[in-house]
Length: 189
Image (cartoon, rainbow, N blue to C red):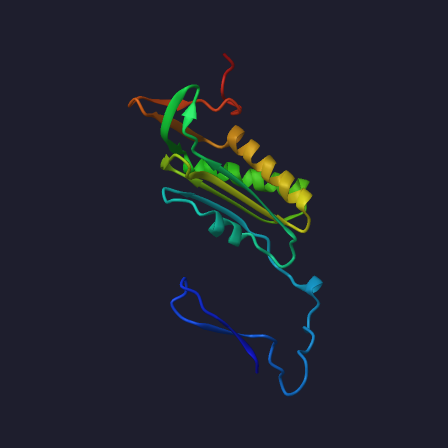
């Protein structure tokens, strides 16, 4: 069998990769017994609130499906400024039983509006430094339109309905709890 050798200073060892797949018993691979359209996979709705750093890769891996051609993501990060003040971090708190229940309602709404397969929402709690993710939303679907619209709907409704509070920590040692203008219980000024 011929092979290709890959050697680089980045690798600690050499790897040999076959140039073509091995033949089994002199024949080519047999077709899969089940057609891909027949694959059954239960939809997943994943919710996680955590004080640990969020991973875009981890969340996107959770919604991968062989039935889907699209995964859409929203990643909300801590920016370093707000209204001329230098922000050093955000701090999040949530009323978890109600927050999880509201996220489940958002999932239900999404499933009624769009043909999506898997949905994941991970939200960070506690301190979130500048440039780190506060929230990651991932949705998979057969086609991009459904997952893109579902992700947009999810973040808009999460900000409007889920009891999560954000405190901005400023460089000058001050801080401010921020009212979410999109939240249904917020009053107009």
